Length: 280
Ligand SMILES: Nc1ncnc2c1ncn2[C@@H]1O[C@H](COP(=O)(O)OP(=O)(O)OP(=O)(O)O)[C@@H](O)[C@H]1O
Ligand SMILES: [Mg+2]
Image 1: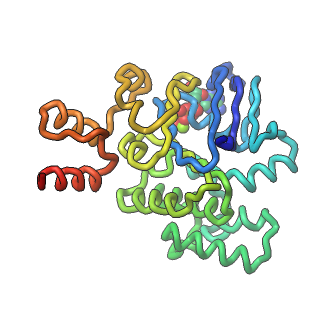
Image 2: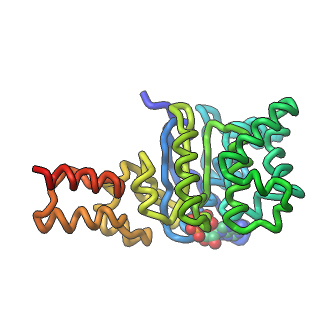
Image 3: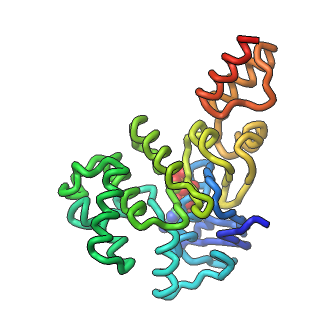
């Protein structure tokens, strides 16, 4: 039986100004999955993420992590945050130390690791995210993309079991977007779960094993990365377009030029299938 890392039951969140951002939301997250969370602006993605890390508490409903109900005392939160790392949508909410290296060191230092170990992990994380050259730079002077990579390095250095990344590639150029996705693939193991939110349907379709779609504080789809893109109504509701590769596949299939069972997931897969077809 699949092991659930998170089980959310009837979660409602009302902010102090009265906005109900999550509405009786129920969701289970399986351990080891690579999940893309999609949904229109204001759907509740960031609010949901903050619940998974204990930054927000339910107005009603319940969240279980590894089979136990979340608790919100200091000790319980510290233990949760050791295991669940979050990269915020806005890196300015994440970075607060004087310089890059100090910022990335903050999390691992709080885990009580030895100084040498922290140093090694921080150096490794800086290398993986290509921020080593920036290590002495004040975080407030960094560009948006640099801040995002430093925030990712800070979580990387803590090696959490669950990664939550709120729009990690927004603001990154295409080189660094690809590099972050490669890094996430590298980190991904059967015991590591990665959940990222994105507005990039091409990224979600190519990268995820599972897609979740939110709209108006609710989950409107959870399933494989292909089926959602055949649900025209859901796509419209959540302001989602089809990935370009699905559109190409559908047009070519309709014209009888191309017929394979399922749409390729990436440009490489498309070319590979196409070459094989043209050799027949
Ligand atoms: N601190 C807050 N106080 C009041 N309302 C809030 C607060 N934070 C978020 N909201 C509201 O909650 C709803 C959900 O916001 P949230 O940031 O979770 O959406 P999102 O899906 O992450 O959107 P985006 O794609 O723009 O990042 C929105 O209507 C937003 O205005
Ligand atoms: Mg958001």
